[in-house]
Image 1 (cartoon, one colour):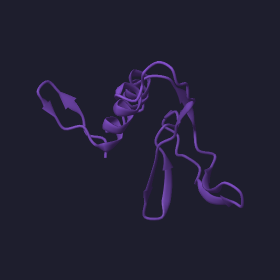
Image 2 (image 1 turned 90 degrees about the vertical axis):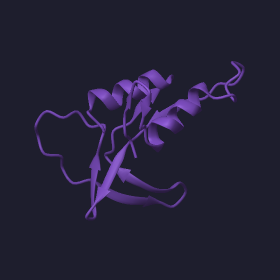
Image 3 (image 1 turned 45 degrees about the vertical axis):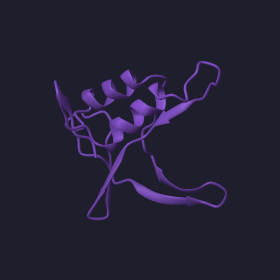
Image 4 (image 1 turned 120 degrees about the vertical axis):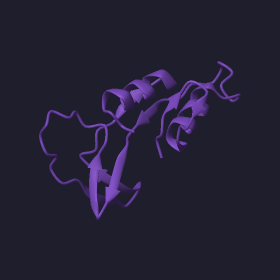
Length: 99
């Protein structure tokens, strides 16, 4: 899903590729504006893990999937970060050591 890039060996996964295309693709011509909020989670063995939560060596409290009647499913307590460039996305993923 994430992968990494090292020189000519680009093994990036779908998440960084989509994020890069979102900000640097042909659709961005400078006239449109949008607010982009980044949230990343992992669901494994029916446990939800917030990948962007600050990691201070503490174990995360269990996150719960909820459903809002008007907006649909969401994860309660999931961290969100407003980003404006692909570089901000890449930095968040690096700081949180998402690989």
